[in-house]
Image 1 (tube, helix red, strand yellow):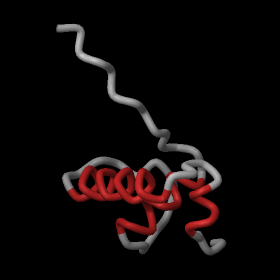
Image 2 (cartoon, rainbow, N blue to C red; image 1 turned 60 degrees about the vertical axis):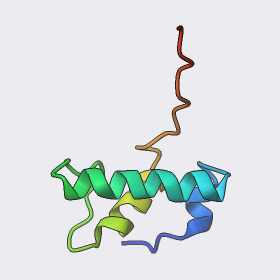
Image 3 (cartoon, rainbow, N blue to C red; image 1 turned 90 degrees about the horizontal axis):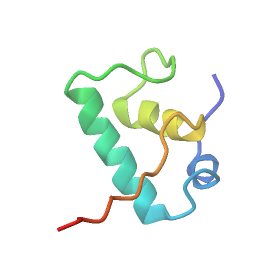
Length: 68
């Protein structure tokens, strides 16, 4: 399988800080039992999360403003 790089992920999420935040949240989800969104046998959770971002399986979603 091809190597994943941060540059590949930055094409999808151009803000490095948002990328790190998103990957960290996804790693937590995987460790809590979420299914993988890409096939990636024998990789660490961080690598799997980065592969998911590079594949476009995870997108940045802006929080909705409160209507109160």
